[in-house]
Length: 313
Image (cartoon, rainbow, N blue to C red; front, side, top):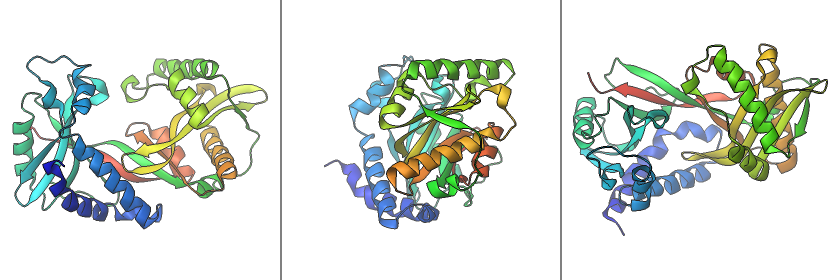
C-alpha cells in the first residue's frame, strides 16, 4: 500500500461535496463510488511508471525524466493538491498543470508558487481546474478562461426536446465510409475559417469502437447523407454515460436545427434499446458556439466546466 492512501479520505470527502450538484443526474451512491474509483486511479498516477511512460515514450523534452511526468501531491497550508503536467492539444510548447483534486482552503498565491516550483522544468503558464458550472471558484485571478464545458442530459429529456422530423437515421456498419464523410465535413469547416485546433474528426478506429460499444448513425434527408452522430458508453473523469464521440453536420445543412433533431432521435434509439434513462454526456470547447447552442436546445446542460487560470501574474 502506497503512502498516498492516507490522503485518500480527505480528497474523496471534499471532491464528493464539491460536485454534489451532480445528484440531479446520478444516484448518490453510484456517484460516490465513481468518484472513489476515479480518485484511486488518480493517486496511483503519482507512482505508477506505466502512467509516466504514456508521456515519456512519446515525448522528448531535454532534461525531463520519466518520473517528472508522474502526478504529484502538493501540501499547501492546511490543504492537499493532487495535480499533473499536461500539454494542450498534445503540443509540448503549451504545457499546463491539471489540478485533479484538492482539499482544505485554497490559497491562490501559495498554489501558484508551489506549482511553479514543482513543475519548473516544464515552465507551465496555466493551471486547469474542473468545477461545477454554477459554483464559481474563489480564486483571485483576473486571467481565467473557459477551456471546455461538460454537457449532461437525461436520455428521455433529450428525446422529448424535439418534435418529429423527416430525418432518417441509419446505423452505419462501414466506419471507413462514415469516416470519409466526417473528414469531408471537417475539411470544409476548416476552409470556412473555423479554428482547426479546437476540434478534430473522429478517426476510423474511434468510429469502429462506437459501432461495437455504442452507436454509429448516419443521418439522411431524401436519400442525401447530411450528418453523423456517434456515441459509446464511457467516462469523462468520474461521470459516466453515453459519451458523444462525433457530431457533425455537412455545412450545406448548417443553421437548420438539424443537429438538435439528430441528437433527439439518437437519444430515443438508445433509450428504446436499453430501457434505461442514462445520461448523454460530452465535452464542448469554449469557441464551439454552434454545438453549445445545440446541446442547450436538447436539454443537455453545461453542468461542469474545465477552466484555465494564468499563473504568470
